[in-house]
Image 1 (cartoon, helix red, strand yellow):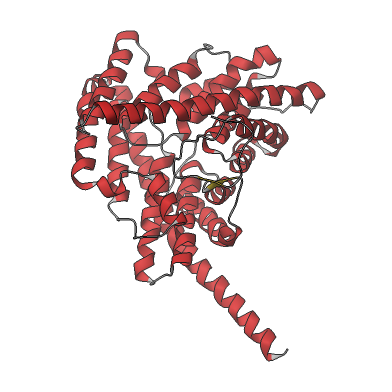
Image 2: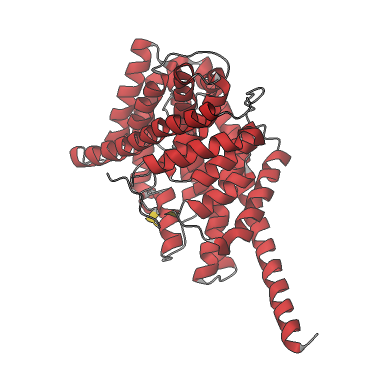
Length: 410
């Protein structure tokens, strides 16, 4: 072996060793944080369901969350968008306070009945914890980008139990139609290990049973495309509605803590007056029902409205789990119209609305395969791709860049 070859091999081994170590450290931090968060979230959900009177406290919980972020969280209030911005244009290390702030505020939101998710919390914790390695190891800008992406992968993978989707999500979410393969090693390693760390801590992810998947037929393929259009337009409506309400509230209500307080009045009032408990929290029982029986055709609209009000007025959490709910119940409603089994279209909708809203069709397809089995892959790919193309330029993440312009216009 000549000296040049030995040098190349040594550099390659050094690179592999470096990113293996960094990814494992990120994974242990993010996976452990997600495990603690999921246990806290389970406690908050069970406590709220056993003490329905807690809904009366939602406006005050919203005020408290808004006040804390006003006083000590302004630098990290942008959440996922801050992480994406720092990956695109590194400026300063993400403050460590992002992790405990978003964890506490999300648990409070769920305890009192806001309609928010959990992905945003896990991703923000993973990114904030990962970025602390920047100073510890004196990482350069490019290495810092990869560490942040590894943190996003680890957070996403560990909160949902989907390591492949988590790895690809971080590669895909930064810009529509473009992926950064230089981060592939760190993201895959961090996602896989973080998922295992969560399992080691005793995390038990929700199981969704869809039974046997029907054989592929021309009509089923066409139905996936037609449903994908509906999923994409729904994802677009969700993103546009959330951004519009957020902007409107900031223009009309100058004092930030009052915004989630007002949102809490609307959500709690609607639930207490009309008994709409099925539209708050994560809504996992309703999602599971969507795979087995017909549900009210308006369930996806109810969840969308409650989530837009919750997130648009300033409650913390995430968009993804509500999007799963919206997609699963919309798929359930479309199933008899398209003559497709409930379970299949609920499973496809589960990921396809998210694919359109987040502009992440590949990660969403992989998630379908990890959650529901590889047999769903072709159906999910068709619906997720169609949803992506029909969802327009506006997504749930404002910091997401445009790597490829879609034909559709806003």
